[in-house]
Amino acid sequence: MKITKLIYTLAIPAILTVSCKKFLDVKPKGVIIAETIQDYQAVLNSETVLNPFGLNTPIVFPTDDINDATFSLQSQTSPKGNIYFWTAYINNSSIRPDLWADLYSQIANLNVVTEGVLSATDGTEKQKKQLYAEAMVAKTFNYLHLLSFFAPAYNPANANVDYGVPYITSTDVSNSVPARGSLKSCYDQLIQDLVGAVQDLPENNINNTRVTKNAAYGMLARIYMCMGDYNNADKYTDLVLNSGKALIIDYNDYSGAQLPATNSSPEELWVRYANNSSFRYADELLAKYDLNTDLRIKFLSIKKADGTYNYGLQSYNPNRGITYAEIYLNKAECLARAGKIGEALDIVNNTIRKNRIESTAYTALTATNTESTIQLVLAERRRELAFKGLRWIDMKRLDQEGRMPAVKRIAKDGITVLTTLEPKSKAYTFQIPLMVQSFNPNMPLNQR
Image 1 (tube, rainbow, N blue to C red):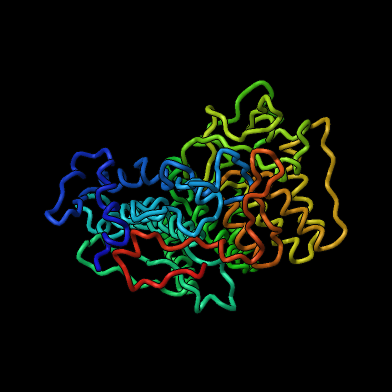
Image 2 (cartoon, helix red, strand yellow):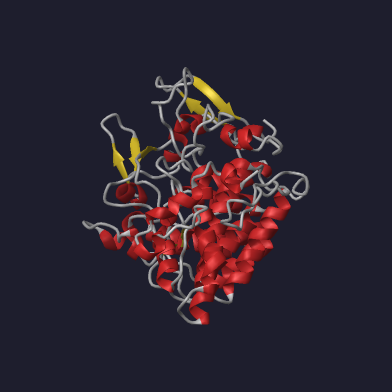
């Protein structure tokens, strides 16, 4: 079975959107020829690579951040609605598989770089190795989101027998589709890729959509958080924070003004975009904010006529890559889990909340023991990172620890429960798409 059958023949053609004329020469088999450093730079700068999620921002729809009464269980066919209701199949028929095809398309684009850049016709060895390393890190981001949707949450007790997703390194359409390795092997591979890339990455890059050492360390911290390996997560979080580059801006300084654009904000570590959509806050999430004093509500939401709030402004496209706030909150959570209550609270209060709450209304949060501190940190993480693309990954890891309550989808009447995502539910894992199954009949399926 050919690689193109895995990704519905979309990955290689997707790169044609890159705006570099030399890059548009195509081999007879459909593999694009890239030759120069500029060609490979064009891949890393392309809109399709910077926005890997497709048209619908699907990473938001399964989360408990959102409430969307426009969806109905009756005659539900839209991918967004299927994700929202945790339906087994994101697509109800054997058509282009949303999310799966989008992410594998970007992996294929990045494989163009990793396969060819070390043989580029110009550039120094240092330049070639840097671009190779950047592409490797960018691929791990896509693979982690694929795992979050199409593989179970990481549990060390089961990771050797649970399935991951196919790991593709080639653009050769004549190659067979790799088997679904174990979940552990997938995570081990991503860690290996990131560790191997770090030595060739720069401290600074041309903009914050391009990879740096801190971006790789941030990805390593995120992956170890997913694995529940908080010692290693703490290690890589510290490497980011000790670089001296981590910054959280004070929203109080922007009274009467807009927040900095995502691609120029100093608190964005590594930028990945999705379509700038608007989402209604779930009541349970909204209740976690002080609506009168929390500047995240003031700057990032719109109050509707019916009293509900929508996240998302046309003037602000949120970063769904890695923020320095995520890194600080990783550190706070690792400290809390280690019983270092005062240090964890210092980050939550003095690094995050002082910069997010109106100065005249700010008061420090307190906790008295390890568990209450963990809960406090997780609540702040929820507020700060809402709709940023990380919540589904967090939900899956927290569910493994028994920290996720049932999540309910409520009808328009505000009362009727349409469906529920129960703790430890198999609905936390979506099924391998029907199109992929049709071309790969021997591929193991997920338990649903």
